[in-house]
Image (cartoon, rainbow, N blue to C red; front, side, top):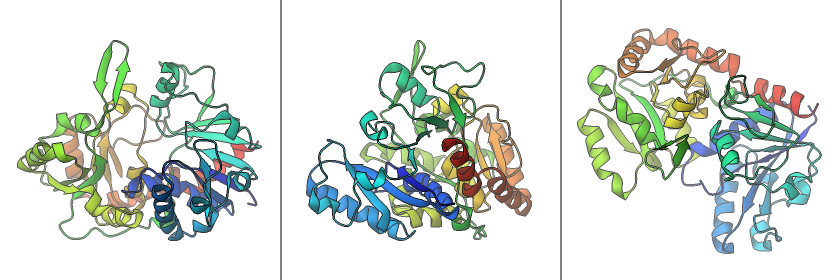
Length: 375
């Protein structure tokens, strides 16, 4: 497929961890597998020495996947990217020659989006993005098409409209060639990787709530006492989280610092591949908004042949509640699903990989998106 895609990513501020990088990398690898040329584009800003160091680190990561020579930079202040920062990178002019802008950056100005012949936005924060737009926190530029990773966004009966935009559902994806099935080592745990605290509040009608993983896990903190399966959390813990970490360990959780096990994309991958499966709760917004969201991280577990036990986020047209992927509503159901996955592990591993192949294969998903975006 002779198509050039400018993938506008948002990783330059998240280079201390490896997981966020895979959100965009799976798309890039899937598109490249279709024969597309990828121009990986990032917005930069700040003191030149700091930006130079960040760009060098980003290029090091992209080089592992054969993408370092196609990095383009754009300056958030609208000025020319300083020569010392731009060395070895393309500019926005090169990026705008692409057949399609595949945009994951919600704050990209209309003046930039308008330079591309076709543009598609991908919403990876379903319902939250629509809420931010409604509240005026995001002034979303006009795009030719809008995709969302939330099944219920824009569907009949959905509770939040968005200025007449049509949102087409596209599942998140995983590059299967880069995520092969891996045997779980003896004694490995059901794991997940996550931030813990966040300064994110959501106003839902008259109710305001904290929207972080800590809040999502609170009703399930005693889960280790309900199951024989080892449970491990790789968390981004701050200076004020020592008491939480101690409490989690007292309750039977294994706790690790995420920066120690997943500081790079390949370390992140190694950690997932060394796990028995995934256990994770969702942020409160996903549960309350019933967006049928599934994490890109969960897809990496599934592709690796790791059954995933994750919190129910709403009715889905295709996500199973049990079988490779288990979706729980209560601590009792979570414990039951963990035991089921462990007792029938080889079969559940095959089902997990099968789900990734059928619904989340980056080649299939990217081909479907291109067909609609370029129509």
